[in-house]
Length: 230
Image (cartoon, rainbow, N blue to C red; front, side, top):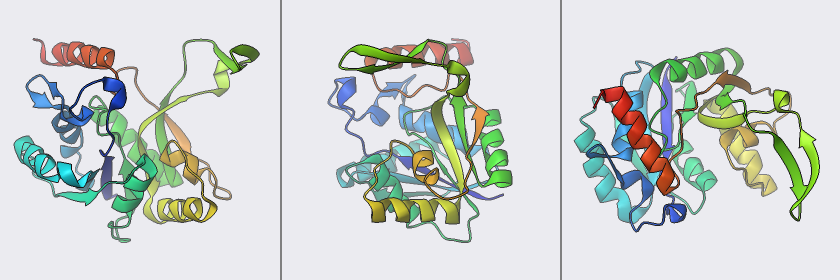
């Protein structure tokens, strides 16, 4: 099943506390974005990668994509002020003939190929699937720093990416969200609002981290050293 991959990469990275965008920070001599791109390059079902980034970053992203040396079409679109807007811009450029769309965080460089394939397979069957992990900590519902309830972990997952959907379904979800003025924190939250749609969850990985803080970058270096044996 052919898949277009969207990488939203227009975030400013304020939590990282650095002037550079998170996706441009170096990890073992290459930008984080390069590592993320390479995770999808070896998957035969992936027909293109669409990167949604700020206009002023296009030149640098083109250079990075060239540095990656990947034998797969990579397109750039103008990102928006929010993740949802960035994905919407990219989604509008994807041809309806492509059956599936995968959305993946540009700064999540450790999604392994087996997991990506499993999410694609699940979405091929059900129309919608995401990677997710069960929380290991006890989860509390709070209000104004006071605990309101303890939420059973057996009914919770922490959503990761990739998140893969039937192209027509995701476009419908984004159109409805725009019409309703709804802003979600991931693509699944938009699809979940459609009638009679169940999003399947595929086991993700504790290593499939999203690099948002300086400590995440330290952990990423450790993971990469383990993978490369350096």
